[in-house]
Amino acid sequence: MKFVRSTVGFAIAGMFVMSIWGDWAGAYGNIGGWFAALAIIGPMWFMNHYIGVIDNPGDHAFVDMAWGIAWVGIMRDVFGVGGNGFDFGRLVSSLPTIGLLTVGAALAALAINAFNKIEAK
Image 1 (cartoon, rainbow, N blue to C red):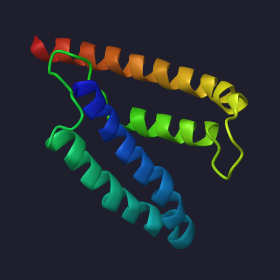
Image 2: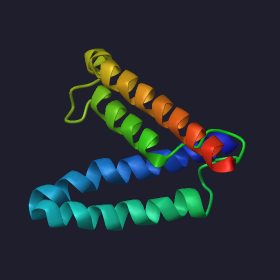
Image 3: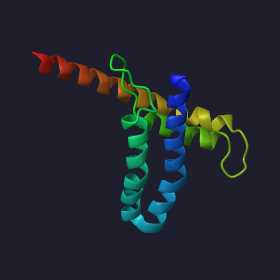
C-alpha cells in the first residue's frame, strides 16, 4: 500500500507541474515560473514529504518528487498529449535523458554518502 500511496503522491505532483507550470511561465514569464514553483511545489512538498504521502524510510535512499514529476512528463508525451495516441518512439528518445538523470542521481548519492562519512569523523 505504501508503494501505491507514493505513486499517487508522485502522480499528483507531476500532473500539477505538467499542466500548470508551463502555462503560468508562458503567460507571465519568469515571475509566473516563480509563482508556479511556490504555488505548486510548496503544497506538493508539504503533502508528499511533511505529511508523508511519499514513503521515505530512514534506512532507504531518499526519493524526491522530481523523479515522479519527470516520469509523469515522459508518460504524458508517450501516451499522446494532443490526441496522437501511444508513441513508443517518444519513450525510446527519452531513454538517454533518463539514463543521464539516473547517473546524476547515483553520483549525488555517492557524494552525499562521502560527505556523511567525513562529517561523522
